Image 1 (cartoon, one colour):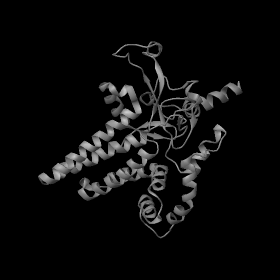
Image 2 (cartoon, rainbow, N blue to C red):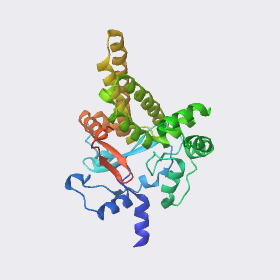
Image 3 (cartoon, rainbow, N blue to C red):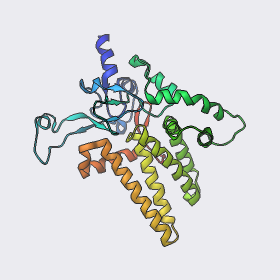
Length: 306
């Protein structure tokens, strides 16, 4: 009945942001066999459904099969071992008594777009991120609408942010809101970059690093964040291969170690106890390297770099 369907629409989740509406749209279309992403892609988890929304969450959800503990089993282990479950992990420090919140929608959109996507849940988000973005968005948007400026949009955004006088915290929130555009910019730049020249790679790495720290502040270890970390690792690897002397190679070796650690840390945040299983981490990293999220869920990367 309609009431039951309404409950499912608002409370059923699948991997990342697969939800009832996205899956229902797929049912109406014909897809090649290789694009059938998951055998079991949606479930109603009553306890997890009680977690409220924030556009700047302190928790992240993943789906997985719980392996048997090597130390021993508990009642929870026995109930969940070998089953597909939703797992909630803290993505940042949560203080005693602080509410656990996560995002109901993909984090990569400006505040007005996020509010539009949240309409079906029946509330207007007034989290810290939304409030701060509303305060500063009016200062930024007019600077992006200069018809004579031929610079790419992302370069105009970065210039506007650097000249805005905004606190770093606000700049980072806005970058996360525009991160889909950043990803498109990275893909276009890499596609058009001849021989991955050193200066071009260095400029992209600086920009991707800014985006990484923005995600650490807001929506740490989300899929887009891990995609950016993969990109940073690949870019610094190119820089390392192009290093001309011992001093440069020492510097780039340290950068490779830094980005390896950032990748490992993000996967541990995202996958928690599952991250202690080396084989599961390998599979997770392979998965996050191969996918991007569109509005309807995951799609495989073809010619794209992220």
